[in-house]
Length: 638
Image 1 (cartoon, rainbow, N blue to C red):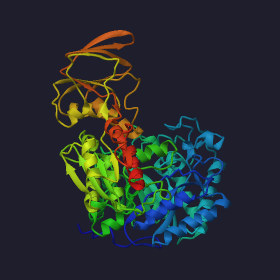
Image 2 (tube, rainbow, N blue to C red):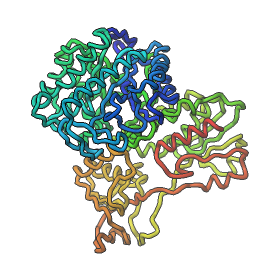
Image 3 (cartoon, rainbow, N blue to C red):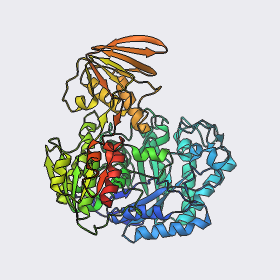
């Protein structure tokens, strides 16, 4: 594909930017004392090398009293931290990448456990996810907040950043813009003109101190259904922002902590979907408009620009997954881009205040620890099992120069990923399959399909090392008595080895069980799910979980929680809920209560091969992220 727009130079204010790809602010949560750590510098350094045009550094606290969100927050108000910010900006700019930093007051998103005091909000309304009652900000405190933003911008300029971004899409400013949170009766509340007063004053004061030529970008919501912000509000705000001197507007949709029940980030939303809202803003302003949210593919980004919906695109998860995305797209190596699969792990880790991690990129967040170096001695390596752990181990080992052979008992590589891609809205799992297959082909891995490996066949191959990645075994709970039951497993259904009957009962309400329920209900089956715990999908990231539960309820899947299965007799399931026995009939019963390790082959090989490793579900059942990371670590060690 020819990129006619994506890699054209662009301009934001006085900044000349080499292409139209912006790295959106990305919370890293690396532990520190408010300054930029070496781990954070390495994280951004890799993305700068990858070829983006502009990096906007993550949300940075500007108010020492009320605006600090968590222990890992960057603090732009501390003099001692400025040298670390200078180091970061200079490292990024070494690669011809422009720099910006997001200034953010978290408002009611800041917890008392980090600030030691009540948070601030326009009207004292609690924010979901924090559930602390904030205090109503006074006029004196509003002036202090404005001064904090000004001081933050001055510090950013002193630290060498080419621009700043004001975050008005979440936190204190966002709550002033929101009719849901802002019920004030003074000059800062009422219609959109009054609700934007705080933001406009901040911009004007910053411009007055840092100079009109110092670029300011503003991040706002194009729509936020939970917070009752409409596209008309965003358009009115955009016009006034331009008048106030803003140099570019970045549009998001819904603040992460406050958008419950509205799908924004998951696979349910088509890629590039929200760009139509960017176009509505772009039509009425004469400054650059940046489109964000669900842009994981450079081809989607190019189309947004060609269609005139935006002037720039900003990406976060896409660049976590593959920092080299811009360089690879420029070179035409699209098949070698490790695309984001929208699994939501990175966002879930951020919400838990853990440092950033990625399912498909085991080096994300570990840039200074997980370098891939050439092997000291070239080995013959057998990888037994072509699922995610085995493929990743093979990729890394072959990249290091080893002679790698993959043996897979089935006729197709992919393992559990092939099943994970089957339920609705999981099609992007194919990105990871396609990427891994392209890499093992690129690095000369020998593939042998339809081969069931035994200890004897391994001995005949005489390898230097063996990596066992044979996948898990399904669990059948011992406490359930099964007598002639028509019992199968999710893998039987998702692989279409078994066709389910019209009525189906699934025992187990975790991720696999509920996704299987959605798959079947979408295919016109009547589905019930029985879960012994008090909630379903407890093993999922929160936003993906919320969206999945909403979809299965819409499909009329019958969900019974805190319910125990006592016995399965043919098509009859005996249940116990609240001490009372119930009877349910089903054509097909699916056991989705988890997996066990599959260590049989590993144990047989322990005395046969000189170097033996076991990775993925065959060692300990887990998620795709654990399989990929274990595969990476072993491939880098062998």
